[in-house]
Amino acid sequence: MPAGNNDPALRIEAVTAPLNRMVDGQAGFVIDHRCVNLIKGFRGGYGYRRMQVSGAERYDEKPEKNKFSHIHDALQYAFIGGGEGRLLTNSGRNGKPIMARRDFDVFTRQPLQRRKNKINVSPL
Image (cartoon, rainbow, N blue to C red; front, side, top):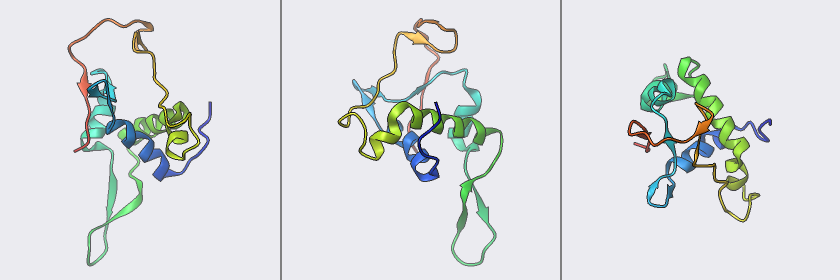
């Protein structure tokens, strides 16, 4: 399903909001340890190119395109399509987030088996 909005600021905020959200006392956004490029992107691989200008430090308005930007763009579109965009623009379901099934592993397409190697990502 295509995203209803392609605004880069809204896409970034659609990921930032779940990163700052707690669900039942746990991180609102959990990444499987097998998502190596996504994790590396959060740890600094995804970013903005510094511009060569005199004076104050300035950065490009668009993220630098590299192997981390593609997976992060996909994540942004997934969150926008999953309802975060509607929540951010106040056109959502009375402010209630859309919850994904917790008993299903999208990687194996099988019922979830508890693993110890999951990484919780939180903002710096």
